[in-house]
Image (cartoon, rainbow, N blue to C red; front, side, top):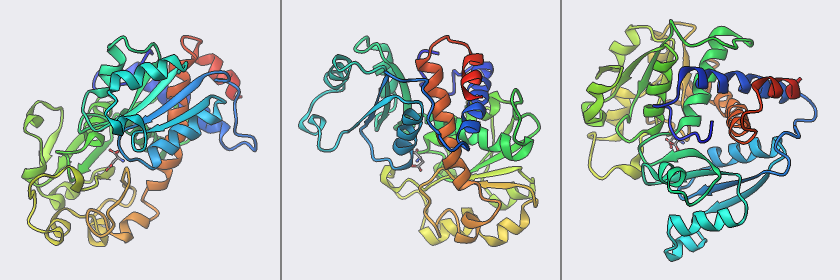
Length: 323
Ligand code: ASP
């Protein structure tokens, strides 16, 4: 793997390979000394043009646990705010010897531009671009689902037989898009649930079922319900009457939790708007995987960095080092 730009074009075998290496990485994280020497001497740059807490910290922790050097570059307070272009920034990083660039950008397609422009030779990891994709989020979600339903050693398994409902602001959500492609590539059935105003126009070409009523979706007994944040910062118009009305119709609360099968799980990529798309009972319930998702994110990003930077050294090598 040279870059990780999206899940739409990620092959099933590559996705499973990342998840399986993430299992090995996770095993190392319960040790007293969490650090592996694998990426010693490599430099990973976190290039963040949009705010982020968990994704940036997660990539930083992942790179450091593999012994890479990490440079955090956030657009605020940098020359980017003085009008420096993506090209100039990228070439500066290249001159500093970056081996991998983790990029978050408000423009859909920016990571792809960086990877294909010829400005840099580093591997590019998309950490969220506009409303397009957030591939490592989907991979950590798939990893979390696989672990909850198929147990600790589920290497090699895909998600066939499972049904995931993705609920809320699909229109603005790169998390939803990355999950639609990845989960269906891995054999899961996906239902999208949203008000009609928050469903993208091109959804008819996606491999999903769309319903507009959360109670109807819950009655279909999904194994996982993934709640999305209402992305107020990307909303230029009024997509629903009031927050109260949104929460009444599309929010996950205690009553809806009670209507779900007892073994189904509740997911959220964070940051949560408690009381809007998800109530505190739902967010803090034992069936919520929110904190597991955060923990698994480090293992999945370790796997992605390893596979990009340690190149074609085989997966066995990772497994040996993890032992
Ligand atoms: N943190 C995720 C993202 O960056 C989800 C969200 O912001 O709602 O896309």
